[in-house]
Length: 114
Image 1 (tube, one colour):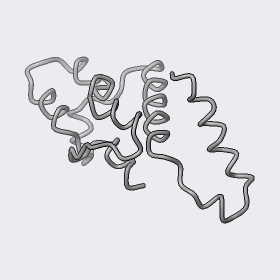
Image 2 (cartoon, one colour):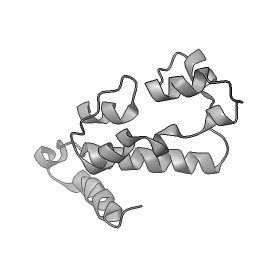
Image 3 (cartoon, helix red, strand yellow):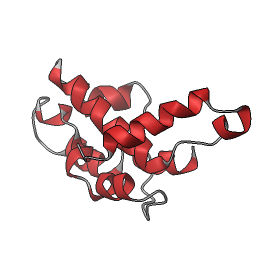
Image 4 (cartoon, one colour):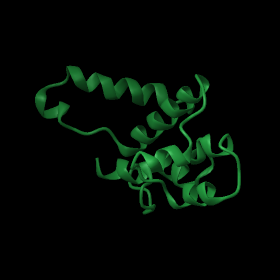
């Protein structure tokens, strides 16, 4: 993780003790992206992620790159990886607060609007 991650994480939670006007400020989308990546990596340590087929079957959207893997003739183990780890959208989202990414169903795009 980047060296400034702990500082930004601490500053985010210090807002809880701030005045109501200051507490209403939203966390930067780049921080949300880094937290999401860290949480998914942590989840991977306890076991495999849900496969892309299971994700689609439960009515969750997948991005275009995940769709390519889903329709590829590969095993379920290959479909249970954290594909965002190698995606350019993750890198952009973790570095910029308004990254120039617009893929449908990309979690990092959704952080821009929240």
